[in-house]
Image (cartoon, rainbow, N blue to C red; front, side, top):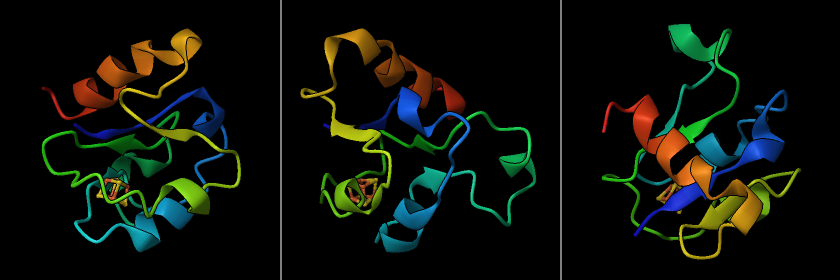
Length: 86
Ligand code: SF4
């Protein structure tokens, strides 16, 4: 299981989630080169421990558990995964 960042993050990239993630699995961070061109932030599904700390930090409510990702955004499960070439 993992958490997933969906469409509301596009153009937002607030990064409050990055600051609270205990395992540093949300990228790109502001200090990483791809940040500027990245459309959104992504969660590494193999590193996420499903703690849920990022969910309430997101000002646009873009983060869901994989199973609770709304049906219109299910493709973001794969979109997050693909950022890490998985
Ligand atoms: Fe990080 Fe926890 Fe959010 Fe997973 S659920 S991305 S481990 S803060």
